[in-house]
Amino acid sequence: MKQIILQYIRPYYKRMGVGFLIKFLGTIMDLCIPYVLAYIIDTIIPMRNRNGVLLWGGVMLLCSGVAVSFNMIANRMASKVASDATEVIRHDLFSKIMYLSNARTDYYTKPSLISRMTSDTYNLHQMFGRVQRLGVRAPILLIGGICVTFTLDPSMACVLLATLPMLGFITIYVSKRSIPMYGGLQEANDRFVRMVREDIAGIRVIKALSKTDYETEKFQNINKEVVERERKNGMVMAVINPSMNILLNLGLVGVILVGAFRVNAGTSEVGKILAFTTYFTIILNAMLSISKMFTIFSKAIASGNRIWKVLECGEDMEVVPYLDEPMTNKSNLGEEKGEEVCFDHVTFSYLKGGEANIKDLSFCIKKGEMLGIIGEIGSGKSTIINLMMRMYDVDEGCVRIAGRDVRNYPPEVLKAKFGVVFQNDTIFEDTIAGNVALGRELGEEEIQEALLYARASEFVENREGREAEALNIKGANLSGGQKQRVLIARALAAKPEILILDDSSSALDYRTDAMLRKGIKEHFPDTTLIMIAQRVSSIRNADHILVLEDGVPIGYGSHEELMESCEVYSEISRTQTGEV
Image 1 (tube, rainbow, N blue to C red):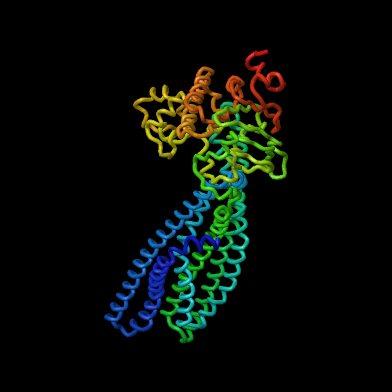
Image 2 (cartoon, rainbow, N blue to C red):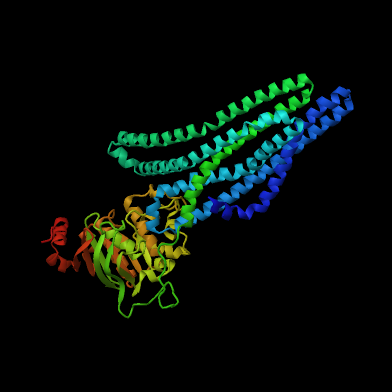
């Protein structure tokens, strides 16, 4: 939390200093009003000086006007600083999240990152604003009110002062307990967001399987946990206000009793007692404001620590220097060997120290060749793609692209070599052209060409007149086959060196699938194609086919070779095609 304040509030120190000064002057004006009132009652009125009453009454009005104006100006400045600082924090946090490795994202979890981007930054925004509004005003009212009461009547001021140590003890004790409790509440909110996110994304499946009641019960449990944590936090923080009210009201009773005896004895005056009770109310409100600030501080500290953990996390996938040679997006290193993609005894596990998801995998394919990968669900097919694009680092062995270890490539250079369609890829809320270009500097001709090669131009033309219409989130207004063709067009648009299709033709009919592969072979002859498929017909013409089972390669070769040498592959083929 300290680091966030030093890094993100420091640029606004001057503006905050001006705001604090204005708030200070406005607060001093507030403190002057009861003092002037006591002077009028005890000094001016007994003299029956009407002009004096009008004069000092005007002074009170002037003090009130200055106080209101200055406080409004300072509050507007505080809101601007809080909004600007929070905007920068959100920007930096979002940028950091976008560049997190997959391993880091898995560690923090997506729902937790969403929660940090939303509710945690909101808590910081509240803290930044309240500190500037109440952080100056409340302490000045408290300290200034106590000082003024001592100038009015030291004896009565001592009665008030006797209550403050107990108030301070309660505030500090409650705050120490509340900060870790708010951290636990935020973690429960993360689980809450995760479940809501999953249920909303899968609502059609839930309804189709008539599992609405089941999911509602699960939601009730996590919702109950969040409510229970909020209730406990609320109960702890609720101790402050009643305690302060009781102690301050007891102090007020003591002040009135002492004041009554002193007025009766002639050692004090009525105006001072009236001003004293007014200052007591000011001090009470200041203490309540400070208690509210402690509540906000508790939330903000917990949220700030969660945000800073993401912002400060180091790079866990550094680039390993390679001969200090200049890098280009179109590197031809390794072409002498003819290797485009090579896995050299690769072993990898998503859980460090856990069972390996890929075990001792080795294969090489040349530029322009096609590799088909097939295997049962969970056999490690998509993991190969993640390692190839360095979404994760291997545990043993190495992955080479164009003769160079992927760890030697800067991320932007490595990613530029690939065009990829992931298994569960995303259609954004944009036009078809916008989804194909995806922020890249692609001309209209390149986009149309990519749509043509992806066999998507036909249905795009049928949408003529609605082309500017944005697609729904996740392409809900497209069929499964249409979405896959738009995604393939996106992968082809930049003419990649390596094209990866991860089960991206499962929703296509056999004819379209065959024409798609034929078009890619004709128009992208130098592009290395890696296709993960569940259908043998999609990969039977590949130069190489890799068969996986539980992360272990059990077959590698052409279709004909595997039909003879790999029992698992031949069984899959016979089951799907009836081939003997």
